[in-house]
Amino acid sequence: MWVALAFMSAFLLGCYDINKKMSLNGNAVIPVLFLNTLISSLIFVPVIILSYGTNLLDGSMLYVPHAPLEQHIAVFIKAVIVLSSWLFGYFAIKNLPLTITGPIKATQPVMTLLGALLIFGERLNLYQWIGVILSIISFFLLSLSGKKEGINFSHNKWIFFMILSAMLGALSGLYDKHLMRSLDVMTVQVWFNVYQCFIMVFILLFLWYPRRKKSTPFKWRWSIVFISVFLVLADWIYFYALSFPDSMISIVAMIRRSNVLVTFAAGALFFHEKNLKSKALDLLLVLIGMIFLYLGTK
Image 1: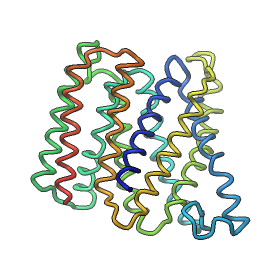
Image 2 (image 1 turned 180 degrees about the vertical axis):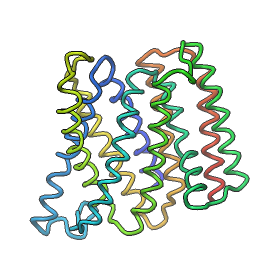
Image 3 (image 1 turned 90 degrees about the vertical axis):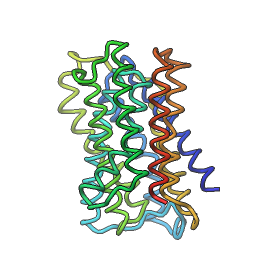
Image 4 (image 1 turned 90 degrees about the horizontal axis):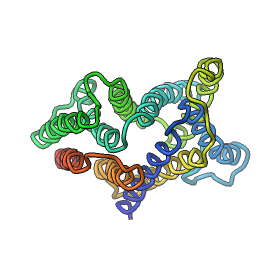
């Protein structure tokens, strides 16, 4: 059951990325991200009200417990990390093909593993080293594929933004490892969305709004709503899969990264992106690398 849920979460994450691309094409990034955080927060408002004002959700997976100030500060730090990752990622997705951004994002588990090596003093075994090396090779091959489309990895700021997004995403994963030692899942999921929304209000009003006439104009699209819906559903199903006693986080995390298959297919079918054969090889190496990372955790 939990494996099927993990695949469902991966599919929904792929739909989330597709709707991001649809929303961001020729559109202003900051208003789209603000609306994403606002809608996600509004989805959780009834859960907060029912948890704090009634006993209806007591003992359920949706219950949001009261948290002390130090826990809220810890979640706020997570919100800053995730929002920074999203800001860089949104700008990159707007300006790059999905068949480029997807495989780069898929290398995030490798970055997390290297972060664990540096921060937590973990040691890599043979399988994990193979996974890391395959991911590095795939990244090099992806840069060659990008050159065919005029995308120079060493001089393209959007590639740099995407790499930064993946690195910050990996940092968020490492920080989650720290948070989950003492915090409830719903405390983290609910409040980091709310805090992101508050941060985005200031970014929208003080950074984007005064310069809005000099940048890409904002256009409302219904795909903006689906960004939040698919993300909230994907995360909730992910946490639900982990609630099964026999579930394995290593397998669930690896399956979730397979969302890149959905985005790659969308890039080919809906956005008619180029050089698909060479990029497919790069993607295959990334996926094989993730399998070796999983084998290294057994």
